[in-house]
Amino acid sequence: MQTVGRFAPSPSGRMHLGNVLCALLAWLSARHQNGAFLLRIEDLDAMRCPRSYADLIMDDLQWLGLDWDGAPVYQSARHPLYEDALRTLQRLTIDDSGAVTADATGNATPLIYPCFCSRADIRAASAPQEGDRFMIYPGTCRRLAETNPDEVRARLAQGRRHSLRIAMPASNSTIAFEDRVFGHQEFNVTREIGDSVVRRADGLFSYQLVVVVDDLAMGVDDIVRGRDLLRSNTLQIWIRQALTGSTDYSYAHLPLIDNASGQRLAKREKSLDMGILRKHGATPERVIGYCAWLLGLQGDPHSTHPQPMSAQEALTEFSWAKVRTDTADRSLDPQAFNTYFGL
Image (tube, rainbow, N blue to C red; front, side):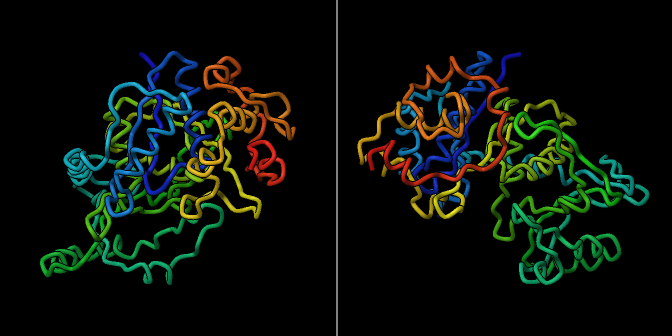
């Protein structure tokens, strides 16, 4: 079967250099395997994602020479698909061993259960996790669903505001996967992931659910994205297993780019966005060349002298062995960066 990769930006702002780096690597991975490369616009939260930013993202990708196959897919048009997936999950239960089935007998717990906790409640009862801002849910409403289902039904009948969570095994189960950049990864889903929201209290579906549903529907099997989603991948594998039983995917989580202050690039800070670079006369070859250099596709990745190159030229240099050589986040040298781009 043909490999299918994707780039799935959230149009909450103009793409910055870190987004371009991820798009380039996803494109290289798919095209290197003669695979399809799809574009998905993750605009589920319409208030944060105006259509104008989606148009700018597509214009930047075309300008860079990163083509895609078929029409772009917009999450905002796919709500019925997410509703169907949620209904499928709501028909399932999880037993004490962590087995997910449609059998509600014995000590089975609903796989999807309502959570009435506020964010303040959760923060007060949780220990924040370092690194990727995961906060493990303490299980308050899961215990309520298991011990007092009548109370849960009463609260729902009263119209109490609630989110929906997906239950994790209570038996310290682990999920492992191989990452093309970071190697073997293994997370304890009970202690390191925890029961997670799949639909928010305001009715908006969670990223963790919709990304799984979209990848399944689009036939994506080659996933490339930032390392800040490395742990989230475990949760997505759990959701995918519940929906289909399938885990046959290729994963690559890319080191992030830090600005001169050591903080990751963010759209809200207008950090090195494509609008700024293009306004100052950057060429596609300079942007692609810089990203290819960060990926280790231009000799010594620690050299301060990247060379301009096109996307097609980067494709001829691409190999995962080169990308795997360095998993540390990259801190930009502002003087070298400004000199290279003529800023």
